[in-house]
Length: 161
Image (tube, rainbow, N blue to C red; front, side):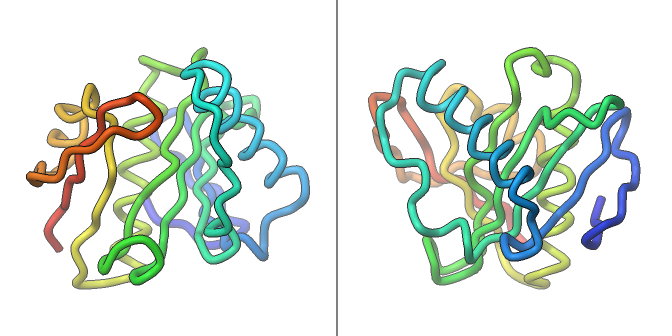
């Protein structure tokens, strides 16, 4: 589901907003960075610099539950910043939101928003290897590019336009 800043359509039992970094409130930036640190740094025990300098050039998806609590987030990286094609990255769901459909709602929304922003272009992701089947179910195909990132096996995947 695509949205414009300020709109709040329903994605299942969740709402989604897609905002360029410059339109995000301080609270929204805080909540996104807090969720990413909570999962990527604390839960997955990966000490790395999450604020990699790309966020200000990206669109950010915020998936909220019925209480308006942030339960999942991702960013859309414009073509040429990380890869030749646009990418969806920093995909994360809060532990308490897993198995609720929040992650699937996030990715369906992210794909639609990426297609709207960058029509006719393939979409690339760097997926944690254990989630490969999930991303295949969303139309992504694995490439031959396997890599280790902070001790976690990853695979690059592409979704054809």
